[in-house]
Image (tube, rainbow, N blue to C red):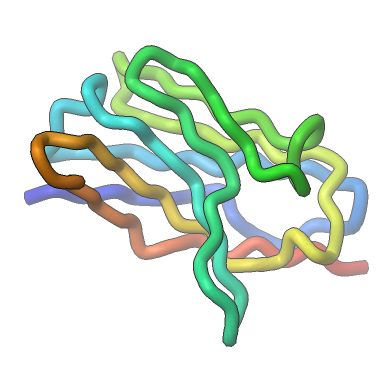
Length: 118
């Protein structure tokens, strides 16, 4: 059974930092691209950052220079370091594992709430 378990969310003041973690089980972690998505009520889920199986990264423009995605294949864990947080970063953050094998195979975590407010 595949599980992606996020942790590290919470309430932080504007300008503060948080580090999200997502630990995977039930998959061969190092062959999956791992991503962080976020969603606020009434809006579509958006990709925040993604790291490929060979550790290349990509970010949505709104977080470039503030967020850093990384992975530790030995721990089956992907991280999202979030600095200089803004109120507009408030959302539920979801971990995603994805690979292409003739069709896309995707798994999702249950999400962790990040609230940026004074």
